[in-house]
Length: 347
Image (cartoon, rainbow, N blue to C red):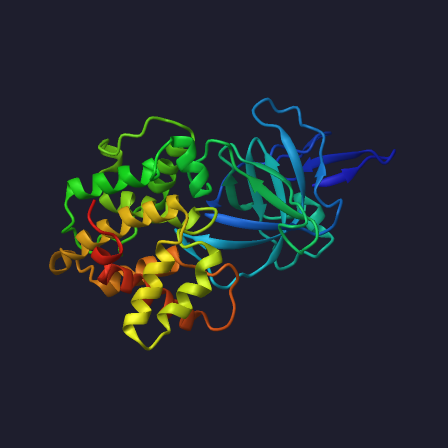
């Protein structure tokens, strides 16, 4: 608890053991993780630099009140965003979010000693937090997570391919090869979720340039690898079907004339940037091979489209009825799967 002496100098009192100290006690890092989050500060000065505590293990970089919302959870994007205020601490590369108790007020949010234990933590994994430029958001005081230069997840697809000097991102190829080597007849190959903690461990290794051997025993659950592959596409800075092409694909799939529908989709796919088109070629041919085992893995064309449609072809902004939008997303992916040999001839 924060108190003041007779001269008005603040000190901190621990009622559990009656100890006092001049510095704010170290905040333990516990709790669950956000998969992704967006953050907006409450005021211009609500996120302020704090004096580093004397603790040797971590440095308190920043602390303040943020408005936060989850945008994804367990590898799936959340359509509804619920914003709430949270006292947030950036310490040693880890963001800690404190849950506001029912009894707390807006004023007490500014006193972390009055709050409950941490609710969520986010390991930035080498990323940094900076004020976002005005062209990134119309809201005031928005913080932007800036990724490491050599990061794989959350990267721009063309930048990743250029950095790797490849036509298709290496991580995607590695996942596909590994899954195929273990067999495509595994039940609900892309509909069962792998252990999220293990998937996050895999992501950490990939993003920190650690040598990744997917044949290692710690990745023995194939659903961890399929989950990581799905998350790779979810986390792309811009989806595989670029935002600029979203409405064109939706308009094409709405055409009643099937010949025109197919022709328009073919033209759109081949108008995409080379990294997107090449990656799409690899992915859809692979998914067609998955569908060939639908009797064993229960992954029909429709099932695959339901999983990958919202992931590969999301709108930049959520507008109108999302269920209706998802129907068209799935139909686009379904059509490309059905006509894969025509759209992507065998190399």
